[in-house]
Amino acid sequence: MAIFKYIYMDSTASTSDGVDTADPDACCTATHELTEDAIREDVRVLSAVGNETRYETLRYIAGAGEKGACVCELPPLVGVTQSTVSTALSRLHEAGLLDRRKEGRWRYYTVTEEAEGLLETLDSRREATDE
Image (cartoon, rainbow, N blue to C red; front, side, top):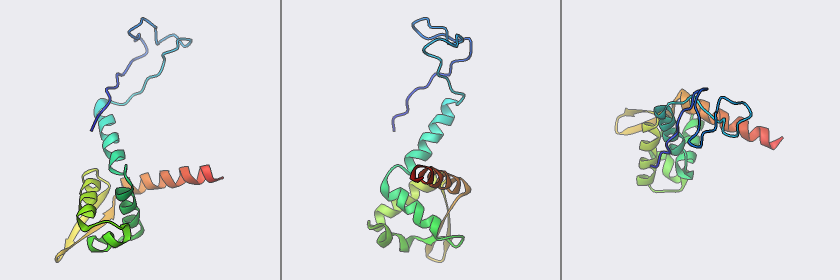
């Protein structure tokens, strides 16, 4: 995964060509307050939902409610193999978007609060563009 290097510039910084970023009329005043670790984490979470299989899997699990979705239910719903679903579930779990529990020989997945917030944000964005 490629991570772009971001450089935090404080209000007294200047760019490599000598433009003073503290000058409000300067052309290069863009800054952010995220650390490289925070950017890396955001990219990890966003890339976890960055393909249709993982995103659709997350949506189905979110729709399953508190009980969660059994791993056995997901392949026919998403239209991919069990192996592909398992890979997607692992990636979503590692990104902190899914919780999992084992009951007997089955694994059940539920969305985390972080995933709920992300999905709500996407829903709100879509609703705003539909208006």
